[in-house]
Image 1 (cartoon, rainbow, N blue to C red):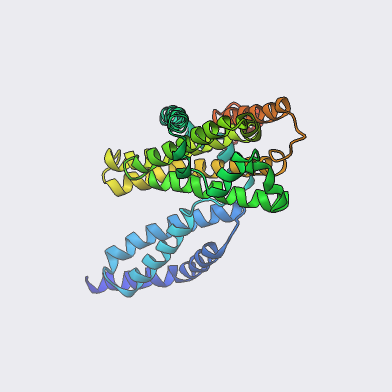
Image 2 (cartoon, one colour):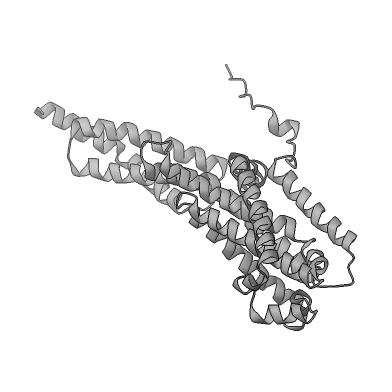
Length: 339
């Protein structure tokens, strides 16, 4: 640099120093702000653009100087504030339930149907196995369950004497959520974990139905499961399909790296886990308050089970999507510029 250029740079720095101090204060406030108005957001964007321009000028006039480092840190702080993901506002929640969850469910629809077929096939295999070899029931049922069924008592209607319905529902939801998380997490093992969990549950269901049928209690067990079983088993297949899709993203990555492909697929499928948890919450309430009561008839249980299952299908297919109003869907036109 020549002497004149040094003096011009010093003059330029002195002229813009007050502006930089104000912009630095705005950047610090933007980083700590939890919610911004439209004016505050526009002011932050304007400060970001100004600092970027000034940073480029400082890098030309005084490369590697202290001032360039200060402006770089301020720009980095503003960059973080500008690109910070939005919080879960009311509109974000609506978009999550209306768009993200049905989109995630649609992306694993084929896998879910295949796993549902596996569940049915394994249930039939469990029925055949226990019907053919009744002594193998000890592999899927506890001695207390076996003893109760052999004496004509189904274990499902004794659970109300152990805990009140509210506590029972909490335990059921906790157990079901653990099964769903296991199906999702183990699905990353190239789908083998999801295959095992779905097949294991199917064998248990078919085997227990066969065992209770042998002792004249099959209809009672079916009656107990009608109100909550449709959604509960569907959610297990759905979570297993999501875990399998997560594992597929590692086997056949759609991004530059396997790690990036896994992160992107996990972000796409995360809303589906939220939907599974909410559906299991409703299923647990039904299983705790409705299923154990013998006074509720089979048609009533069937209506509850099929109604809840239909509501789940409508939600996951996107047919419960809330229509946007004309004011929300119409594109915004910029106001006419004043002459």
